[in-house]
Length: 111
Image 1 (tube, rainbow, N blue to C red):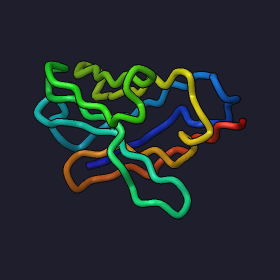
Image 2 (cartoon, rainbow, N blue to C red; image 1 turned 120 degrees about the vertical axis):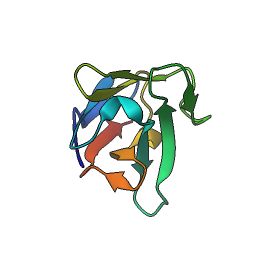
Image 3 (tube, rainbow, N blue to C red; image 1 turned 90 degrees about the vertical axis):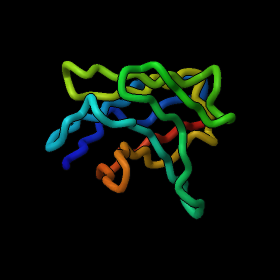
Image 4 (spheres, rainbow, N blue to C red; image 1 turned 120 degrees about the horizontal axis):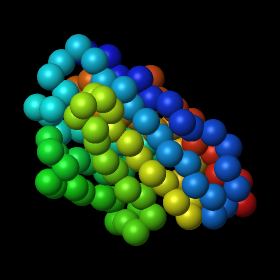
């Protein structure tokens, strides 16, 4: 299993970023996929998850209405569109499938 995130960066408060996670080594369309994040000094937390065919989506309360998770099973990729970013969204964002994790991508939001 390999999960490779991309799309992080530095953005001003109120800005947007789109994260991507390219998956390989397993039957992508058979698994629920998730985005987690970990801020400095804090525990890793679930941001959003999407079921196998986009039929079930779940968001953390802190990102509802601002973030959108989606997946493209033809491209073995999940996305996280992040709008209206806030400084408290600053964290390393990780792609997840069960007990497998990507290397993470840093998102930094300046005030």
